Figure 1: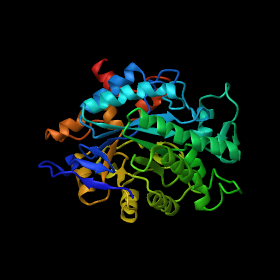
Figure 2: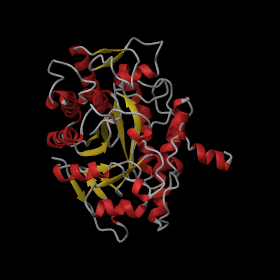
Figure 3: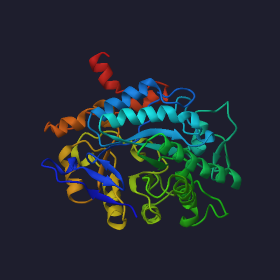
Figure 4: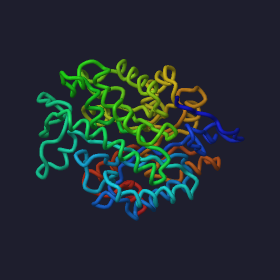
Length: 384
């Protein structure tokens, strides 16, 4: 069963209590949520720039770093400058990355994913139709060419997650996180809108969640029972007719029952605009923060697994309140750590300023243009 325990008392904030998830001891409750950086080598290997970026994050005080999306199977690649664990030659770079992060006192997990039909948005002319649960011709948010996976392709993808996890453990990474959110393949299988299969991989919730279960089982068979396996789960789609929260909550329960060691709660398929996606804008006041709070709180009450809350968290006192009220066990931050990679240390040193990220999403838009991850506003104001 998943295990969360406080290691020792802290004279500071509850957010700075050392906590263990299974055998992974974290120095605090802050998680750097997976953030694609566009800095990998073109063969998927870890780059020198990434080594420096992760070193700065670890030095900045975060407890657990989750890497950006890392390809588990070549057919799921979404960017030519994205990390991969599809082959053993990727292991040395990740080993070096783990060593650098550990030297600075943090832990590191790799986020494994398959983009599914989303690959078609980037590799339009060079690739065969993207792989998906089903062919959907009436999707107002997706029009790129795609085809339905056949049974053996599904099985091959399942095995690839287990193989990539074995490589992660061999590289010295502290955990893996299965990416089952944000419109990627596992979200596509879970959503009744994109999964219209009539075989054992579609239909009712249990069948639509079967890919998650088989991936989890294959990972466990290759890394053992003692290695932390986390999941980022999208529990509701961003438009009517997709996955609804009542099924999303039940999916989270299944994941916890199977033995997943922590659940990071987010959204599934994206709807229209940023407001119906995982990266909302205009987080300029307290009541706009923590926009997945209700989902996290409700899921925390029904699962026997640690819960990570992500989504627009900017104010230290609010984060503290979330943990004190047992609405989540960890605070996950993405965009604030792009702007201020050392903000956790600031807060630890009693500088409790609100995170200076203004949630403009210019960092994301720059990534879409092929630029490397950076805070656009910071670069503009500081003239970097």
